[in-house]
Amino acid sequence: MAEAEKEQSKKKASKKKKSGKKIARIHFLDELRGIALFCMVFYHAFYSIGVFFKIQWGMDLLNFFMPAEPYFAALFIFISGISSNLSHSNLRRGVKLALVSIAVTLVTYLALGESQMIVFGILHMLAVCMIVYGLIGSYLKVIPMWVGVLFNVLLFVFTYNIAARTVGIPFALTLDVPAEWYSTKFLFMFGLPYKGFYSSDYFPLLPWFFMFFAGVFFGRLASAKKFPKFTYKKHLGFFAFLGRHSLIVYLAHQPVIFGICYGIQWLIGLFTQSS
Image (cartoon, rainbow, N blue to C red; front, side, top):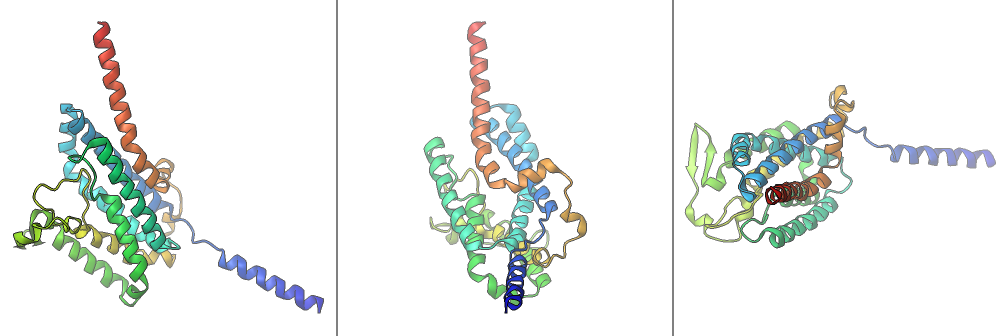
């Protein structure tokens, strides 16, 4: 009897170990996300220096790097979609991120005013995507992975210029979006900004929703542990650290940039007065 009880307790312990087993961390994703975040931080630094502090070399660098900004933003969003396959609750993550994004809107409104506040930025967009995936994720399993990836990439390309009032395939087929669609003040989050709308950081659901879900479908390889072996190894520690703490870095980098710029301005003024 005692031996049978011992055997049962061993089986229970082994089940707990199996259920508590974690999917191996894909460090390469952390590194790529860290590189994308690093580029975003520098881009925002040039934006702040050029736009807010009116320094010409900041504007020059901003204009120089502006064509590259959509690429590292797309990489960041795509990886966020992949990582959603490794989350225990995307719905919970999305709600938390939505609260953070609302706080960002309020803080930027109070600090920068209505003309420079963030109305619907990358955090707002990612929050909506996570919530939607948390609600419908189980229904997407019937769609083959590569069909989902290809379909979302095509829709991303098709709607990429919707904020500029056109949709279609660049250099092949483009269609004008009816002007009436941009007349309401409640569709800006879908890439239909009304006249006079401005957001310092603007990532509408169209087209970026589709980049996120392209990552969601591709991320099935991650949850199935089918990524290449090298992706599970560490290569770039600094960028991996940034990638693991992306939300904290993203929230902190602008106050740090402003603090440095104000500090430099104060020192320049101090030396100017003393001379």
